Image 1 (cartoon, rainbow, N blue to C red):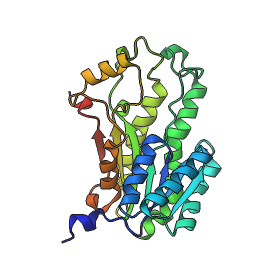
Image 2: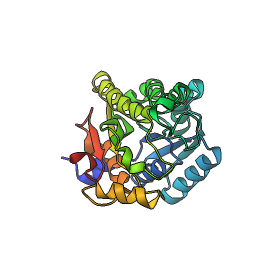
Image 3: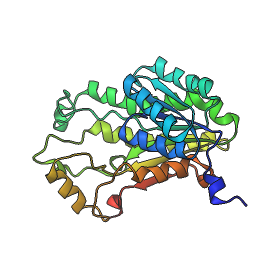
Image 4: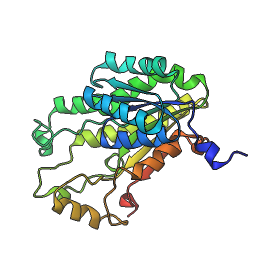
Length: 267
């Protein structure tokens, strides 16, 4: 029987992390790199990709690859797994962390439902959901090759629960229908892929609650009041979940939605 240290060891494995230069993607990259995994950092921001990849290599001594890519571009998205596999010697782990979250001034986004635009809906779906389909499809030959492939999709509590719009009163924040629908779709895509790609590839999702990142004080107070653990999440909270789902610690787990929300959806 393997030890826990052996089960979590990712030496000799390679991961592609979308949104890898963002707050959450970087945290997951650190977790995997610390366990010995080579990491391809995919992000829209070319400079941020390079900084993150260089930092992971310097800190953890693993091979890395900066991989700038616009996930709204299907051709670029479809080519990304091959680029990662060719540069790093294979691809065992795919983490889809990138998300279209928009901004408060984006037309048709953080507005009442009758004013939300179909164009913005499509942009959100392309990044949050369609790109996960494209990436998994393109990465499949490598994920299946060594029989230990793991796909981790980053979802949201708003993919499993309706929003309380009162949380956002008095702020420029909001909760568009497209975001919720894309995350709910991602969870169901996870279940579908888990049954179809087994036994060589495992597919799981992480449903994440709110992460503290300088939101207005009124929003944070309302959010915390509704959370059993009485705080918002921080980036560090996702590192253990990512390490668990990516490694052999979860070798008998597939099709699972790991809810990491401080108890938000337990009420």
